[in-house]
Amino acid sequence: MSHPSSHPSSQPSSATPRPRDFSALTAYGWDTAWEAAYDDACARPATAGPDPVPGRVVRVDRGQCDLVTPLGTLRADTEFVVPRDPLRVVCTGDWAVVDATGNPPYVRALLPRRTAFVRSTSSKRSEGQVLAANVEHALIAVSLAAEVDLGRIERFLSLAWSSGAQPVLVLTKADLVPDETTRSHLLADAATSAPGVPVLAVSAETGEGVDDLAAAVAGGTTALLGQSGAGKSTLANALLGRAAQTVRTVRDRDHKGRHTTTTRNLLPLPAERGGGVLIDTPGLRGVGLWDAEDGLGHTFAEIEELAADCRFADCAHVAEPGCAVLAAVESGTLPERRLDSYRKLLRENARLAARTDARLRAEQHREAKQRQALGRHMMERKRGPRRRS
Image (cartoon, rainbow, N blue to C red; front, side, top):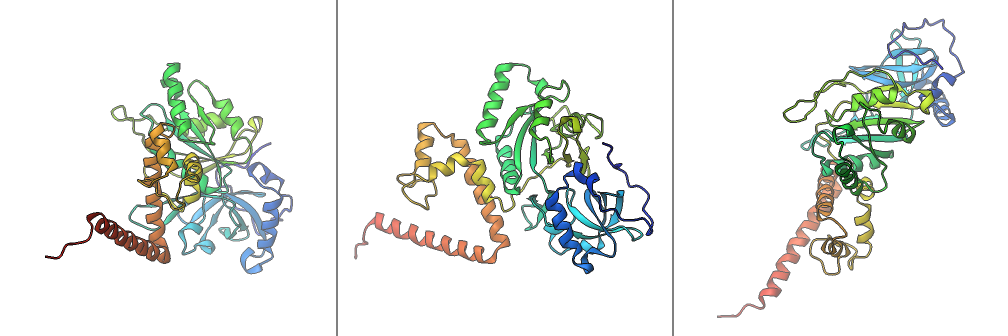
């Protein structure tokens, strides 16, 4: 099956008939549920425009976007869908209602998202940034060419679980670790940090693991995420079966990557490997949490399970008696590094939530005062009653 070009085609004239056959979009994830959402949007004339067609956003660029539609690939203006909420801006992977009669065509409405991969834009700001929309699989690429940062893996996985997508952890450049014992240790460490997540060692250079990875993400939409230098573009080309993305080498002195992919692009995967689409994203230097409480629960599932056996329901796993989590650390069944990472990410997520929720901020302030008062009370009890002179 041929796919529409990834480059904008000439715009159709207003006399072009609008097809009702949307089968050309099936390869891009179109299904009956999206068709129902599209019909609902078209039932609102002010939103849909006079002669709409559905389309999926394959790239966003400076107030315009490219969409694959039944008419081919169109470049459309996003003026009608510029919200105040940064989480509702047009993003690669969105499904939209397009008024193709305009010159240029206009995106008139976005269909409700099923999932969204969101990170905080900065530790000093209270804004979220959507990296990819309507994603079923989130590929977290981590390079074996440098020391594996387990804390960063846990951060990525927490965001992936929170997005509603199924994470898959990909240890790239496996050919650079030829020793089987060393590689098995690295895989085991990564698996410990990724409960419930497939962990695959892949080499795009040799082809090792590429078929297994393609099978794991066949069908649906897959977002490829990771730091610069993780080998995402090379991995994308291996999955696509062609050199669609530009590849650059990492710096020898520190193994840091150079930004190769500068926009988020949605690309069709080969039908012979199960089809679906891939969203390749730019390398991420910072990955701030955003509303990741549920994701943290998934990423640290073993700690959440242990916490259910703590003596106190509000146990903070610091020094409380009867803490099942601390007991697991002491016995060696839970790595102390995992607990430290869990605490750190919980604190970060709570701070961000407090900045975005005034009521939660006030509640945390009250709890802090209560803890201070309790601390003073316990200290006075420990000292005993003061003697009068």
